[in-house]
Length: 360
Ligand code: FES
Ligand SMILES: [Fe+2]
Image (cartoon, rainbow, N blue to C red; front, side):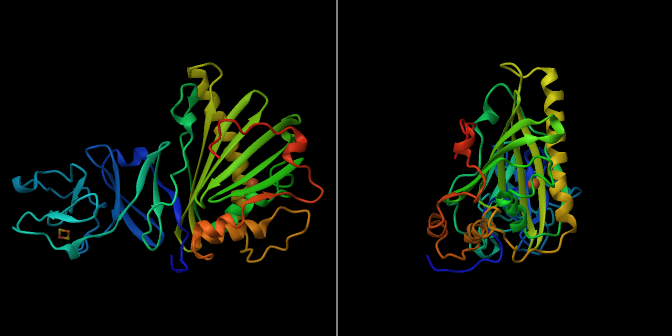
């Protein structure tokens, strides 16, 4: 593969909640582009560039067009295709025009727009973004617990858009020294691991605000856009998700949620209350990072101390999603391995044993 540096990172990214497209097509903006997302009649989500090639109409931002004449069928969505609200040209799920209501014969190929790989996954619509249109290199992040009995699903928190390079959000993965000052839970052991397109952090420590209860976490990014974290404290087990998606260069949107283990085998009404409280508590913890990010200046080159986590290494890993290392997978595997911090215990030394049931 030729080395072509990208302007925006490649990977799987959250672009909407699943339920947002249940009511019809929506328009969203990410990666400095406008898109339409809709659910086809088969149930499959479809994501296309937003603008009809005929005369530039936004395919997802229309609530009033009639589309009622018989030859157009009166519907925006037909099968997995969508009609433009202006003159009724029909785009199929691959982004090709396959019907023009007042035209016989083949539809122009030049009317095609780009279609993006999308999955409906854990209550989220996730897209694979690659500036050059490369197909997905790995599956979208997924937790099997989402489809098992006994887990309360998240209700995603939508955070305000934020002017920050997403790299700084991922700096958190190496940041062993902010856990005390920012979150009140200094870590007693710490490790990063890189496994190809997955970046992992294992850490744990006593939570000062909760009577010194130990918190154990294994957190991993599957590519640059989706963080999942298994967190165990007392008799609570939860998975947290934090998704960040570039809106443009230097601006992101983020979502947050917690998938929480019910007390019994199945989910009872009291588990919902408990799960909402757990998510609110986790959001409060995350908000402490968020507030710092809202007001900070860019850290183009962190002044890393030896007793801090491997920021610069993790940034190298992040850079592979821009094609900075040529072939992404080769660039990542060169970084594969465990990273420890001088003077800080490792998970192996501190009986960290929470990695079961995690897809890493
Ligand atoms: S602008 Fe889309 S059909 Fe005319
Ligand atoms: Fe943090």
